[in-house]
Length: 100
Length: 193
Image (tube, rainbow over all chains, first blue to last red):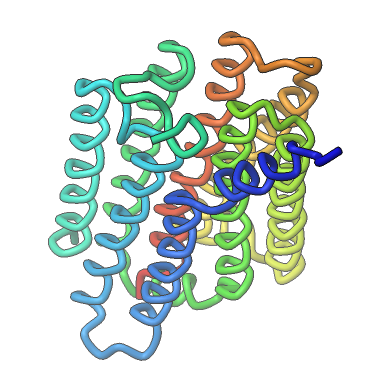
């Protein structure tokens, strides 16, 4: 008798292990590497710091939208979390550039 | 679009209460981040010199652990919705292992600083370093404990119930928050030149 579960399990395992969340993980790792490069051996540290902070919030939004599944959540939650990402990012970059 | 890949459109993951906590914690940490940058603006040379004393390789390694653990939890939620208990448990086990690994790395990092005579009182940078990473580490301990508890979810031979899924989503949201906060902390403490 053919084991039909074998045909079901493979696509299921793929759905669990391979998908948008896995692509997002790879992108997060790539952006981390880019941020790392920005923090080393650059001459314009002011601009580099602003880019590093901006990339951190790009990563934060990816975690919120994909891992936290806010991309599929009701509109108010999407708005509130985007307000945090935009507000905190602008605040920290502004302080980085102009504090002191 | 299947339940394995993403939640249903319009679906609120987890309990409403956990979202109040998550957003409140994000706002509280944002305030701490602004304090850090304010003090940095007062003494940029001290902060630059102190930042150079951090082991950036360990910070990068811990970032890899955090991102991977978050992926494990996201994949585990998909496994649970499909009723794949064994894969679910393995993925949550991997996330827990990453959490423990993060703590071990942090222990060695803090120990090296303390052995070198650097502590909370050394200067403002290290005051923030120990306070921010300490509060974050508290989150890691709580999150790892929650995951260990949720890993025991047992739904027999059928599919998990709505409460079981919602409980795991809530615990998962807390873990993703821990990842999210570390992403910004890593940038502020380790990467800003």
